[in-house]
Image (cartoon, rainbow, N blue to C red; front, top):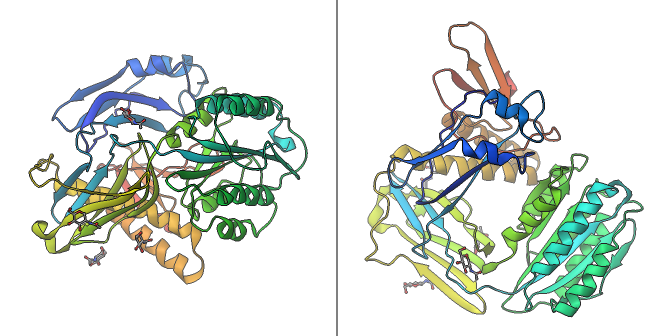
Length: 452
Ligand SMILES: *[C@@H]1O[C@H](CO)[C@@H](O)[C@H](O)[C@H]1NC(C)=O
Ligand SMILES: *[C@@H]1O[C@H](CO)[C@@H](O)[C@H](O)[C@H]1NC(C)=O
Ligand SMILES: *[C@@H]1O[C@H](CO)[C@@H](O)[C@H](O)[C@H]1NC(C)=O
Ligand SMILES: *[C@@H]1O[C@H](CO)[C@@H](O)[C@H](O)[C@H]1NC(C)=O
């Protein structure tokens, strides 16, 4: 239930206006809910989002049952991109840099889709995959190159090598896509290695290569991770889309994180084809590759190297400013655009756009990003290193009150003695796995989960 709850979210960035609230698992009927979402701009850079659907609205939307809404509240927003270098906020020893240039030429891409067609994909999943793929193929630009691989226990190619996305090739690929049928067992390993081979064989300078895996299966062998890492060798990102809840999502997360990508869960719902297409759109327009964010005079930085940057996305880096000496702090971004090295730095006449962000907010953003990255790192390491990373993540979560897989929130109800302990939703349960940001009030405390 989200009964009469009011959620306020603060953006640190100039907000372009439209803010859309949506719950995962809910689709078209969300309009009804969005109507009661009110956005007011108090200060020019802060937007408050109030969300309070009535009990009745929660029961009558498509996909809501007797229990009302259940899931994560996702707020999508766009930002003003006036300045290609982005905005840097500084205060009390911390900085946060939002980098989201958009006036750059698009880079053509080489994309290989590796699609699971094993027996478990049968029915709606495979149908929706076909639907999404047909639309994605239509959206490829002529200068893109693409490849299609489907797999069960065997591997099937549409073509053995990447082909340009001419209208003729796209039409032929659509015939292949329409005929994807489910059968057999799952061999993710062999299929991914083939995909990586196809991309590696045709390295085209000045383009961005992307490998996309769609599967609902469990890994068939322990050695996949090492094999795939070796085959990709840091040359391009691997994105893993896990379909449904049977999938071993942690495995897909590890697989993509070790290869500069991300894993995304596709919910088995009426709109799964839109989710697939939505993911593709996020990576559809690469603008930069080999992005290195450099902060002279900065320390304890969050991630600074990004293999690709896509139009419509945003790179956020936070860190501390050494001895809070703002004058010695020189940020710059170096990257490759098409074939050229480009260098972004702050125009000296350009004033810092935001003066009034409360200092503690920057520190919290830094802590939030750091915890998130520590938790990702924790997935990838083992032994004493794992314990060390976990300990650091726990310390920061407790210090800054974040609900993470390592902590739980204890809520003391007003006027009553009883307390309620909220754990973070477990993976594999129908709730999305996200870090909760900034829950804090007199009635809530964040505890070390190990001690509950
Ligand atoms: C990137 O996005 C912006 C804003 O939507 C758009 O104006 C621009 O044309 C896009 N760039 C490319 C290369 O598609
Ligand atoms: C980085 O953060 C840690 C923990 O907050 C702190 O002990 C350390 O001094 C910081 N490093 C620098 C160079 O400021
Ligand atoms: C980031 O990239 C730069 C230049 O490409 C490289 O020198 C540096 O080692 C990289 N850092 C990390 C943490 O990978
Ligand atoms: C980027 O450009 C600035 C100003 O032109 C220059 O001082 C700096 O050395 C350049 N950085 C790199 C890494 O090329």
